[in-house]
Image (cartoon, rainbow, N blue to C red; front, side, top):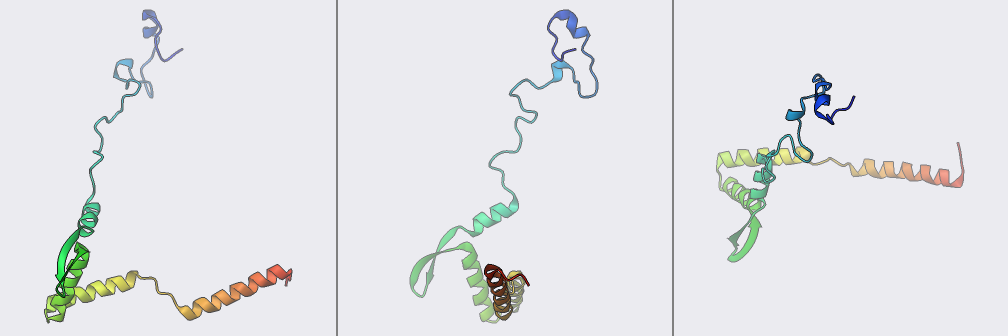
Length: 132
């Protein structure tokens, strides 16, 4: 039995059921089930915030104009307000610094050089053919 009716009498043979929708309600070839879908230009909040913070603005610093990102300008403002003694700005700056330090990978140079030395010793031992 075929999916597609080939003549008028064959339409009676096609049984509609599980995974066999009626021919009239099937999608046509090349037709999507969700033709409008998500608009291509739609962005989430994180993308909009990131794009806005990366925009450049002109600022005057020490009598010279320069272009910096909005994120840099906001951080400079926060640091300047904290330096002038504003308590809330100090708290926000300390929280920002702590969050940045928590995200930065802590790399112990002494452990790294010791581990690198052990690794190099092992590589040299294998290259020499020593199988201890």
